Length: 201
Ligand code: IMP
Image 1 (tube, rainbow, N blue to C red):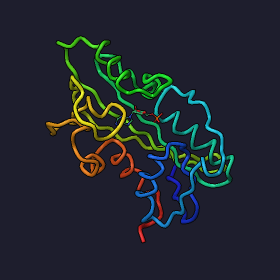
Image 2 (image 1 turned 180 degrees about the horizontal axis):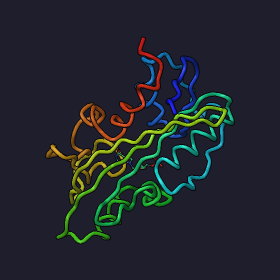
Image 3 (image 1 turned 90 degrees about the horizontal axis):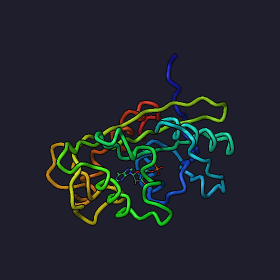
Image 4 (image 1 turned 120 degrees about the vertical axis):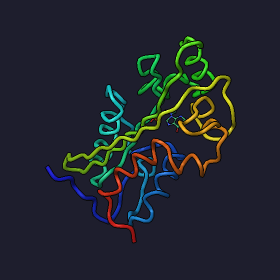
């Protein structure tokens, strides 16, 4: 089946996270899309009941597209640690607890790990583009690396201070925002989505 192409016009960003809205709006701007967030439209956030990143991104994108009558883009991302069978994975945000404290989440990862063992990990970002008629297109970007302990650097967010991407010596918390955004799991997913977007103006 051929992949569906998005036409120029309004696109809902199915996220209530202002940081993600800014980051995705910057990436989408050159494609002639007028971005409006789910928060601005007063749309409810569905519960993330999927068992994969793509399932969760799809359910968020579909809910926003159906409620707004416009195409919608959603993302779902997280950190997967090989020695923990892929945890925290889709539960990455939840490991930070109700206070969204990522020092707590990073300590949970460290406590679960055998510190002498391998520390391979990767970040995943799923992006889903959904239409009001229920059609959905999804892509997934991945970046591999190693866990560092103790956490290093104040840049970035989430698990950034404990992740060193392959080929780098500093954590995502230590490198600049520009360097991180130039090539990470979100950038790689966006590259895969680009052929479905209107041509850049
Ligand atoms: P989501 O908002 O449900 O997609 O949750 C994603 C969670 O995964 C975030 O709250 C972060 O904890 C983590 N995460 C995803 N991408 C990154 C990243 O680039 N750096 C650090 N943590 C990330």
